[in-house]
Length: 303
Image 1 (cartoon, rainbow, N blue to C red):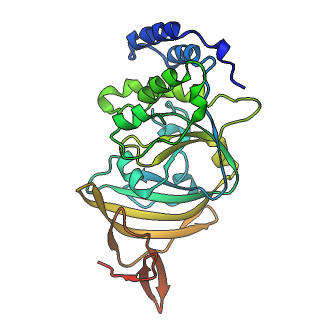
Image 2 (cartoon, one colour):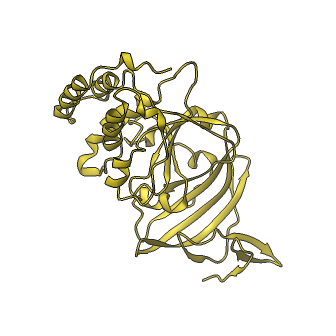
Image 3 (tube, helix red, strand yellow):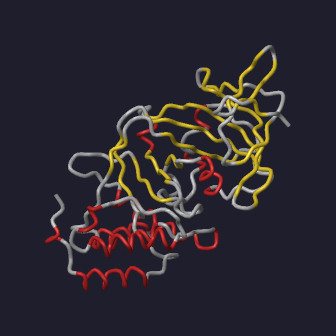
């Protein structure tokens, strides 16, 4: 149970936030910011969620050439880690989204980019915390969705704190202001602290680049290492164009799984151009020829 009596009064929370906002993020450390976040989240209530097995997630990584091994599809190796919304340099985090389209937006994909999209499905019940699901934040992100109902944020100062955390965590960040990632990482670390003996598998939050229309998941390394996500499919694609809120891309190759630790690419001899909201293609070899079907079973012509 969250005890609202432990929470500082609202005026104290506002003063702490004023101090926090006045810090120079170029000089402040993640730990400096986390201390302030801990203060304002004392007595803070938010519902975490158990997701049943079968949750489908899409992960994208930019690659100029086809990757070859399982390690290329999961969290980055230590020497390739970069500061991100929920992880610092040296922290391995598996980022994914609930739609293929969201992946393209979150990667800022542009024409000419090649990337691998892997599709995963959870095989266990996983416990996730969340941040960003407030009405004001969805409005700020120009979302057409209604944020999911989180009645736990009605405890004590929680609604005020939830709005502040949502706005801070889901702020747009680019190379020009990536010091602000320190703030989002501090918020993530507070939300991923173990509670009542339970360990979170990760954190989910509304997509920032795609107007909160889908969910992003930042999944901790241990969840992947314990094999709690099954690899369903891999696609190697090239972005052709982006216009009218749609990505057009070419499917260069696909794999339905692994052969040992190696991605079992089909090595297609033709390609298919589709849009990000097109039905998923199912490519099979029939009579020595590769044929693509959509979800309705209709044949999709190759380029």
